[in-house]
Image (tube, rainbow, N blue to C red; front, side, top):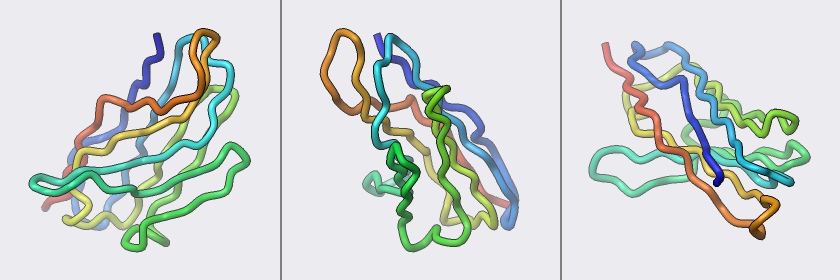
Length: 120
């Protein structure tokens, strides 16, 4: 049974920073691509950032230069450092990990979501 546990969300003032973490567990053989998505109220879920196993990254245009995605393969974990936060970054953030376990082929798994609120 794979579990993705997220942490690090909260309330922050505009211009502030937060660091999100997501740790995967459960008989994992290998983790492949990892990503962060977000969903604001009344909007569709959108892709924020991705990182390959080798460390190549991509970002949604509005977060380039402010957010940094990273990973620790030994810990099956992915992180999102968010700086210069804006009110429009307010959303529930979800991690997504493509991985293979000892009992199942490669597939995507989702975290439970963590709320990020940017407000003064």
